[in-house]
Image (cartoon, rainbow, N blue to C red; front, side, top):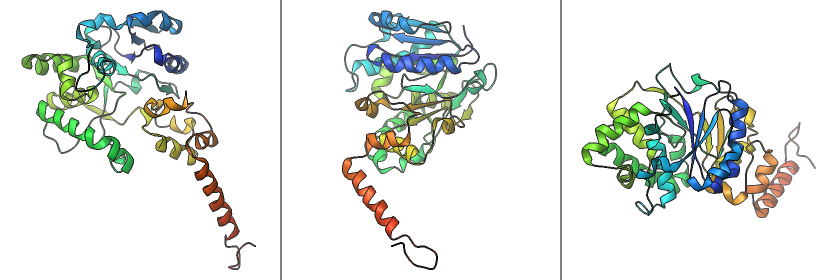
Amino acid sequence: MSRLAFLLKSHAPDFDHAQRMVESFNEFNRENIPLFIVVPKGDLGIFAAINGPNIEIRSESELGQYLVDEPVAGIRPGYINQEILKLAFWELGLADNYFCVDSDAVFVRPFIHEDFMFDETTPYTVLVEDNELKVEPRYYSEHWKGRETHLRHIQDLVGLNDRRLLTCHGHQVFSSQVLKSLKDDFMAPRGWSYRDLLAEAPYEFTWYNMWLQKAKVIPIEQREPLVKTFHHEGQHLEYALRGITTADIARGYVAVVVNSNFSRSWGEIDAAETPAQTLARYATWSTLVATLRAKVGAAVTRPVEGGRTTP
């Protein structure tokens, strides 16, 4: 059993993104941390192409007893099953702790065990309130309000009394010890399966985070997110306009994600693309023309020495 491993849940439609993630993983994995890629049994042949010394492809059928074949709380089976597999992966006995990584992720700097582990046995726990997202009008209306309702419901169910909403969107280091406690001490007394858990609220990372804060199964060694995620194109465009490069991002994060929920319509987006490429993708022709007119107008009326304006 590994002290630390990475876990990627993927499938054939995500292969190109997964391949890109694995290439960056191999480039920056300085201490040969293993990566387990869990895919449908029928996709094993496809993913064999990205197998390697530190990579092992596993069939999701190994945890098939937990998987669903119909929607749960109105959410399609594929989405629920990837959440179930992340929560149940510990049962395979392959890793004491595992960092859940998305296929959209691209690693941008070298990483070692100590980026994810506080000490030999205790993983870091990513916990944030995400208030910078709460103040975004678009994110608040499209995501925050519904998400907050579900997260508060999880808090209530586990008996955690806290005004704060400390959790994360993903890219958490899961402790097998905590997940075993969640199953044995919370789910089992209620007769719940992983399906039942997610039917109450489909947020696997918050179930882990809230139970850890309630039960304190392991010491909570808190840190900020390890992965920079662009949740919508506005956030991606903002970084581009500010001239923030992947080299800049690497000072604060080990990886970057351009969320595929919005980016798939644009194809595979390279986080290292130029600001001009990002602007060209997201800005409409009318916006570009209006910007150019405003730029020209500002140049014409710009004050110069002596209080005069340029001609």
